[in-house]
Image (cartoon, rainbow, N blue to C red; front, top):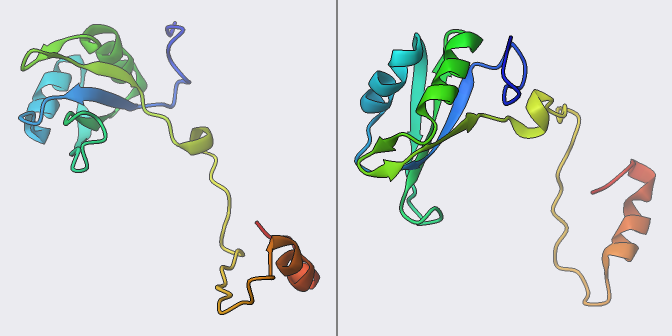
Length: 131
């Protein structure tokens, strides 16, 4: 039986936050490998200092059970004296991506200052919805 924190039996990826910049992919692979077979690790560096200089990453396991075991045992563990935060990795809208293959983007420039969104919406209304 899975814990209340699990998304579904198909989820195999974890988010790992609060990573010291010295933590490497191979270290993450080794640490999380104690919970089961790790398929892939990816560390995202905080280049723009948006996370206080701390990196974050993702760990993908070969199966859900290993990912859940890692979540339960490694959340809050200290690496380089930093308490890591482990949670399920979410994809936007929980994996449901909008099909944008039929969407088009246009640029309309060199317009008079009097032209506003309402005028543009009226001018392009014959071509379908806009956002």
